[in-house]
Structures are given as C-alpha cells and as structure tokens.
Length: 303
Image (cartoon, rainbow, N blue to C red):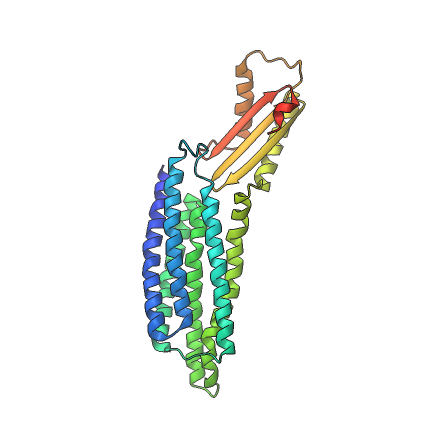
C-alpha cells in the first residue's frame, strides 16, 4: 500500500534524525554540564526506541490480517501511542522533580558557550524536521505520524527553551544578579515539564479510549444518523449499532429489525439496501470493517 510505504519512509527518516539528536544531546550535555541538555538527550534516546516500535507496527498493519489476528493489527496502533504518551508524561515528571531538586539544592553552573551552540543548532534542526513531517502528513493524514511528530515538537521546544534560558543566564552573569544564573538550568526543567504535560495527555486520552474499546462518539453518532434514515425510508421496525475504533481501523456492526411480513423478492434487494447504507457512511476503505444484517427476531440483534 502506497500510504503505508510513505509512513514507513517518514518513520525511518524520523528515527535516523532522532538518533543524531540523541547523540548530540548526550555529548553536549556531558561536556557543558547542563542537566537540561542531558534531559533532552535522554528524551531523544527513548524517542528513538518508540519510533522503531512504530515502524514495526506500520509493517504489521500493512499485512492487514493473519491466521491469529484475523481482524488485522490495527489494535496495536493505540497501544504504541499509549506507550508514547506515557513516556512523554513520565519524562515530564522526571524533569519536574529534577528541576525542583536543582532549585532547592542551590542550582548549578553551566558552560553556556557550548550549551548555547547546541541550543541554536538543534532548535533549527528539530523545528525544521517537525514542519517537514507535518507538511508531508497533510496529504497522508496518518494519526501515527501525527503523534510521532509530537516528539519533534517537544524536542524543538526543549532546544528553543534552552536557547532562551542560556541567553538569559549569560545576561545575568553580566549584571548584579549574576548569582541567579545558576538557577536558570533547573528552572528551565520545571517550565519545560509543565509545557509537556498537555502534550502527553493529548496523546494518552484518545489512545487509551481505543485500547479500552470505548465507542468513538463522532463515529457512533454518524452511524446512528445514517441507519435511522434508512430504517425510516424502508419501513423497518428498529436497529442496533456497535462501533469501535483501533488506530485507523474502524469496526461497524449494524443489525436492522424488519417486520415479520416484510416482502423481499430476492436477496439482491437486501444487498442494494446494504450498499446504500455503506455509501452513506462514506467511501469504502480497507481499514473499515462493516457488517450489516437483517432479522425479524430481536435476539439476533444483541452481540
């Protein structure tokens, strides 16, 4: 599938670039003594591992089905996104705790020359790659790529925050408030952690709902609206619908209750109604599992 191939290519590029960022962050962090840069490096290392897992998931989804997973591998997408969201959340807590400890402990000195070079260089690199991936995903519309790109946004924020804070610290050292410069690095950790929490929740909440199998409200409402219209048009008695979404996979089950004396000349008549309902629900997709049944007995309408 062309879409899947493009996803794999983007995730491969993202993984290679993030590996370079991780190496740079750890190296500059050790040299400059900046805990914020080391934190950026640790973030990038774990981000690389998650990107490799995403690449594996995309390869599996491309296979669509197997003997053991006969409905496909779409359920793995929200699971890996929950992992990424949890990772961002935990790393934010780590940054918050270390920042508070650093402030309480009296701060620490940083080699601002090397740290500033890192901050400027990687702000440009991370920001450029974030906008590149976002632009490519406008046509692809992959949620996996969208949330994977959050790691680049976070890294760009980290680098930009470092750049601003190091400039502030350098300025403080030239003033009577030079003693405050040692608090810039840990304070930055605290501010970055606070900014990361909403991003983590943005990934976690919808993905966790999918892992639990909760019905997506927009899809559920649209299915019920379309089915209700069909039921009224053809004089059926009622209906039941069940929907789930796992990643890009949408599972829709519709049971329509017809009167005992409802006349159907051929089974083709029911197929025509099925097709009409399927068209009303949107264009056919390999990611949509649609089941539509007709019955005169309500006991066949419950799962």
